[in-house]
Image (cartoon, rainbow, N blue to C red; front, side, top):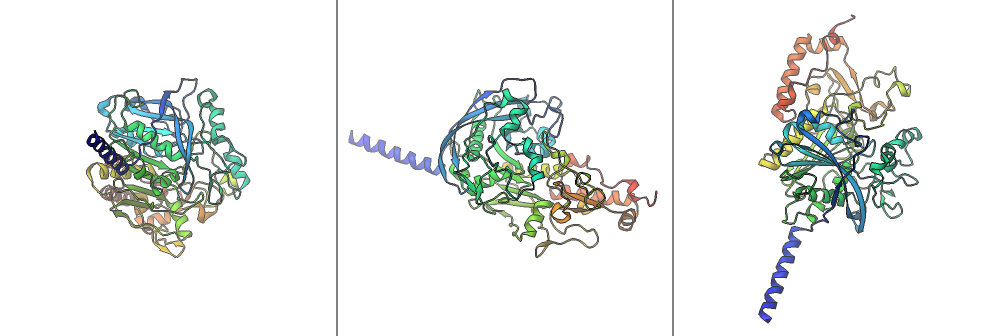
Length: 497
């Protein structure tokens, strides 16, 4: 009996050590279908708007679920305080034919403003073309006083414009019956970030981990029942990308695992967010980088200009650990094609700058094609261990990004066709001070175009060559190239007509 007891104790000790090495398994949440109502869900791809796509034609279906359970409340400094109950919603899009599914689910928290799926907007054509599943989810709060989403230094008119499209009040005004049950723990007195109330839901990290666990567990009654989920990727853009920087930076990737020790998340892509800008630590490389998952950050011209002006160094790429950082000139922080439900962004005319050439023409080039190419490249890094491309950093002169004397555009970074063969000077709000969120460009005059290219035909020829280089470099997919039209038109080359 003593021998048996010792053997049992040894087995238990080995098991505990193995579990410790594998990490902790998060609480598994519960799910229930959201009862139908007279409206489509917020952020639905069936609704006309920025997130619309013909799901039926793509062979996809969209379903909404409540997800509920208990998740840890974590401070911005990474301290886990306690578990608390929550109820959120997840919006799932998946192929109706299991044979179409590629084994990977993309997850992203919806952004604060208009509850939009920024990652979905930027990659939806690619996702359905390649057979991904998608799960967007809500991390939001009941409106406290004062609302931490609106810092004290925000102009009153800016805050007023967004008051109606944030927090659970916005969601319940849209469809009370559907979203009345949603709730997270939030205590303004207990959670701070950068000396102010933390605007991020303290359960965000735990909820993201639980969602990944739920999807990767392949439950017979789960939201992806019938599909064999092998991988989960984060594709999180705009303000809620900070959640995933915190997650990796604080070591949750290593701490929380599948029961067999596999990672919950197999790759992370974050974009359009200068991490730390909302408050707290300014971090570009997570301090606890995973060894078994890539971490990818994509900066538009707006975020990279922010870092240059604040003299924040750009990180260096690495294959071990797997880190990539991309600066993409000629792409804006926000386009009209990106805005969420109820979001109305002012133009130059609205702020009295309609006659200012720096402010009147919005950037609207298809950044989604670059985002899709990079997501595809990240997928290959995970599945076949093929490293993602490395791009040069934008050249700096102190706190100023360097511009080419001929084109007027930034030197370095990812060279999209519209930057390699430009027809405009691309600018951002930090430079123009136009008073609008969306970034702008100044089209070249006909004289300038003819001086640079001679004829429209020559311009098109060079643009097509730039597309071919972008495909070779990994910043444009061949499937998207045919849809990428030159920015300038024949009329732009005509003088005085």
